[in-house]
Length: 206
Image (cartoon, rainbow, N blue to C red; front, side, top):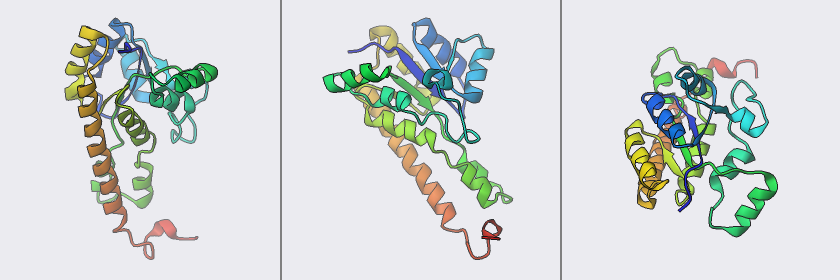
């Protein structure tokens, strides 16, 4: 079992993140983060490496592109026991990312506002978050993925005991991810299908 070296944390729901991140750093685990999550941790005295520093690429396109990078997804998706994967990681400077804690943009909360426009809705469709979550859940054999702050304590307890979480825990957490992303995509589709493109001002002047 490999010991956890690095965690990527990027959250909409930041409840409990200070204690969780502090505990990780106390165990020598490097924290990667973005935007408001990084700021909140720094404000609480927690050392954080910006994802843009980790990848060497700035956040761009009004924040639409932050984590969509081979150094991030290679770090998540590489199979630790696959010699070919490890050789490729070494060749390209890809470091493992062993924990991913991510929440998604609050799409349902956004569209619940009766004044929400189609443009507002579109900007609250999360791309990087579901991509990180699905990649991590797919590779649950090696990556611990967290979408619920209620799971922080169990993850910390297992890492303190052995240096990593158990495979069964990682599997259970991965199942939570696919339940979440499925519901998220369904909410988006259910809202968009009600949009009348013939009368919506979003399409004016096409």
